[in-house]
Amino acid sequence: MNWAVIIPLLLFIILIFIIGFWANRSIRLSKKDFMQEYFLGGRELGGFILAMTMMATYGSASSFIGGPGVAYTEGLAWVLLAMTQVVTGYFVLMVLGKKFAIKAREYKAVTLTDYLRTRYQSHVVALLAAVSIIIFLFSAMAAQWVGGARLIETVTGIPYTSALFIFAASVLIYVIIGGFRAVALTDAVQGSVMFVGTLILLIATVIAGGGVEEIMQGLTRENPNLITPFGADLTLTPAYVSSFWILVGVAVVGLPQVTLRAMSYKSSKAMHRAIIIGTVVVGFVMLNMHLIGVFARPILPGIEVGDKVMPLIALEVLPGWVAGLVLAAPMAAIMSTVDSLLLLVSSAFVKDIYVTYLKPDASERRVKGMSFGVTGVLGIFVFLMALQPPDLLIWLNLFAFGGLEATFIWPVVLGLYWQKGNKYGAISSMLTGILSYVIVDQFFNQPLGVHSVVLPVLFSFIVYVLVSAGTTQNYTAPVTNPTR
Image 1 (cartoon, rainbow, N blue to C red):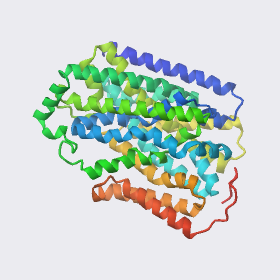
Image 2 (image 1 turned 135 degrees about the vertical axis):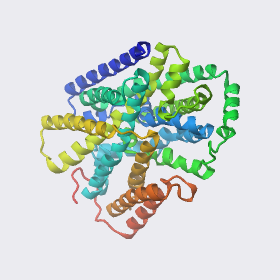
Image 3 (image 1 turned 90 degrees about the horizontal axis):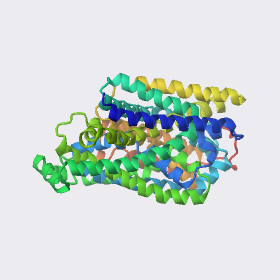
């Protein structure tokens, strides 16, 4: 084992634990409703923490492990494609804006499912939302755990299963005890680590490769297509690259884990500050990460598992202790995403199903026990799913992203801005989004040359508008306890 690398990583994890225990103390001392505190941090996020938690939640193992792995394979084309993510935070906060946060407070919504249930006055919409979150986010969480385990495996040399166990135990401890506040605060620390770590690694990679010009010449000698906008095998067409912006840009507003952040800030000033900080940080980090993947190819040719590119290049071009500090960046990205997803799925079980439908009169003590217990059990299930990992985890993560976006984007956005949108339109849109996405993804890969998420998002939009316009709902002002 390379202890010079491992010790900085261990210190980083210890710091995360300290934050988790501090957040747990805040939960115990808080006089606010437990679920609002545990699952939403008491709606007290400032601008900097909001920006960093959005970036850290969105910038996951897919971006920091899988993304550089694909860039290593495809070349500069994947860097171009990845940069469509720059507008993510800006787009989410500008589209949802103050209105979403105000409505969420008015409805006393703690989760996105809470918001949809109250807006559409429908238990069917709420159950569809909760089930969709549980199904698709299991895939997304498995991808993160695979990324964390592969990072630990590569750095320490221990077997994959042992590495997965270490990662799972580390995340579960601080998420279970600290809730959303621990997640948001650790995201701020982790986002800062990502920002600095990726810059250091990019500079070291360029120096190790003999400069940008030498690296480009090496890429050209191996395969001239690596420096084109179309990928190593010329498979990344303009239509596909352009449509990818739907998946990682526009439709991100439909991701529950990102949308939840738009409920949690404390003021419009915090939101505006988060838009600026988030846009700059996301652009900087995504550019650095994917360039590192491409530039690593001439330095370390022949890497067979793309997900190992990041840790291997860090170990190659940096001194041990610096590599340990830098590798805290992808570890931070993975932990910050998996903690958010774990908490989101836990809230779907506890708040959206158990408290709302099975045990509405549950005591706060029982709810606390359920929240801690469900989070732990979910972690165990995801651990079992991650025992057989795919070669490139980015595809597992993007599958989950597409499914969630096709399901939620129009019930959220049109429900916020279109008064005539009703529960029939929302139910039809969600079912259309789920079914069409699974069918297109499995049987019609890249239909018409575009990403498989595009047509389901389009279909779900058309269905929402037509069904809502063609039906009427006895609409009254939304209430906290809606009826069917």
